[in-house]
Length: 266
Ligand SMILES: [Zn+2]
Ligand SMILES: [Zn+2]
Image 1 (tube, protein in one colour):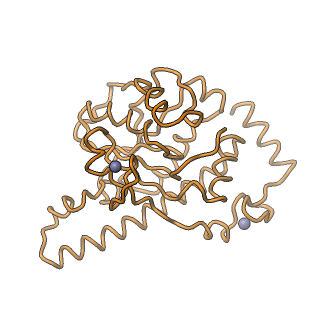
Image 2 (cartoon, protein in one colour):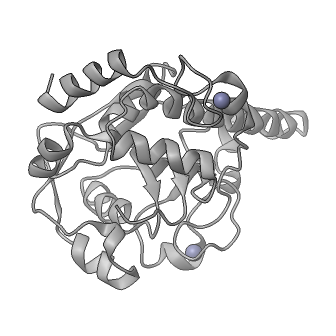
């Protein structure tokens, strides 16, 4: 336990928690506020925002990007989600991890159900089960296939400052909800970068290029990888990781995040 975490536990004892949405005492997020968060899974290309079925990267962007798509549970503009992420990341309210992971898991479950129903329709129409995945490029994560969850790593120095890596914490909780999800630790930070939130589009791509390296001890050949992070904005971080992973022989690389859109500057 870091000094920051000890201090945070001490604060919990002195000042009991209250719901971040309505202020109800004794809970970080009450059931009523949790249920009030609308699920609007991103259904657009993560690079140009053209409408696509599951958040797949569109055919045009596929020509100059590596990420196959992004599954995100909610727009970042939702006030409640915004406060949850903020208190989680910047005020180190670790209890938020469980709520946010539950929220992402529920969104994935719902999407998996929709894909299953769609597949059922295809089967009823006489299309072979083995051919279904080729329709509309269904991401492996929604087709209930084995996937490897790779949290986006923080630079060790930044992780020490913050006390935890939010992407690892989130991935750990999400993985507990799915039998087919396995966490891996193959991507590592190779250099310290400027916080992406402080930069605009092209600068983000330059800032993040060669920021990661692969730990070659694990083979990812022919595997489906899902990169986990809290928010996806320009997708340049995920795309840079996807570039490395695709070069190492991965079949597909998707991103899975709580929110999509533009976060406030920290
Ligand atoms: Zn509440
Ligand atoms: Zn696009």
